[in-house]
Image 1 (spheres, rainbow, N blue to C red):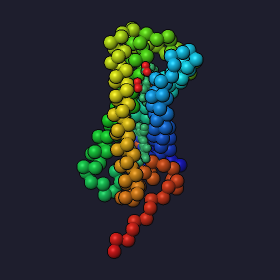
Image 2: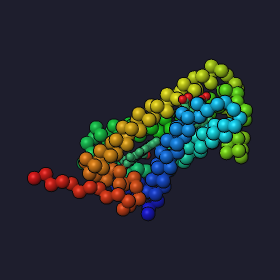
Image 3: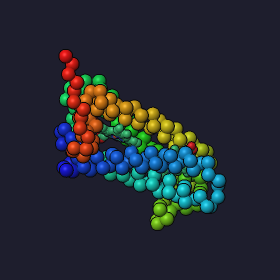
Image 4: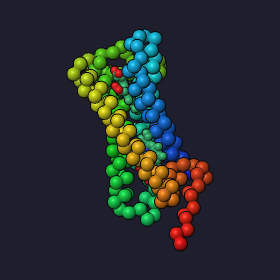
Length: 193
Ligand code: HEM
Ligand code: HEM
C-alpha cells in the first residue's frame, strides 16, 4: 500500500488517520454525553480522565494529520465532479478540520478554567492548565464544547451521507479511495437502456 497520497487515491497514512480520528471522536463524544449523568463521585473520575486523555490524543493526531495533508497533498476530486460539488466538499472538509481542533481545545479550556484537580494524561504526565480558574470562561468553554460537537455531528452526517451517495448512487471511487485497495468494490453502473 502506498503511504503517500497520489492524484487519485488517499495513501495509507491519511486513511489510517481519517478512520482512527473518526472512530475516536464518536467514542469520546458518546462517553462525554454519558459521563455527565454519572454520580459526581471519585469512583467515576477515571471516566473523565479517559475522556480528556483520549480527547487530547485526538488533538495531537489532528495536528499530525494536518501536517501530513500539507506535506502529502490530496487526490484530485473524482473525474466528472461538478465544480460546485468540489467547492462544497472543500468547504465542509475545512469546517470539519476547524471543529476537530476547536472541540478538544475548548475541552482543555473548560478543564483549565474550572480549576479542577490536575489532569494527568492517562495517569502519566501532568497536562498544563491553559488559564487560571475563571467561572465565566468555564461556562463559555462548556457551551462551546457542547455546541461545536453537535455542529460537527451535523456536518459529519452530511459528510458520510455524501460519501455513501457517491458510492451507491453515483458509483464512483470517492469512498473506495479512502479505504485500502480492494476492501470495497464500486457497484457496477446499471445499464441505462
Ligand atoms: C475529540 C475530542 C472531544 C470530544 C468529541 C468531546 C465531546 C464531549 C461531549 C459531547 C461532551 C458532553 C457535553 C455536555 O453535554 O455537556 C463533553 C463533555 C466534557 N468534555 Fe469533552 N470532548 C472532547 C475532548 C475533551 C478534552 C480534550 C477535554 C479536557 C481536557 C474535555 C473535557 C470535557 C469535560 C470536563 C466535559 C464535561 C462537562 C460537564 O459535564 O461538566 N473534552 N465532551
Ligand atoms: C467524526 C467523523 C469524521 C470526520 C471528523 C471526518 C473528517 C474528514 C475530513 C476532514 C476529510 C477531508 C480530508 C482532506 O481533504 O484532507 C474527510 C474525507 C473523507 N471522509 Fe470523512 N470524516 C468522518 C467520518 C466519515 C465517515 C463516517 C465516512 C463514510 C461513510 C467518511 C468518508 C470520507 C471520504 C470518502 C473522504 C474522502 C473524500 C474525497 O476523497 O474527496 N468520513 N473526512
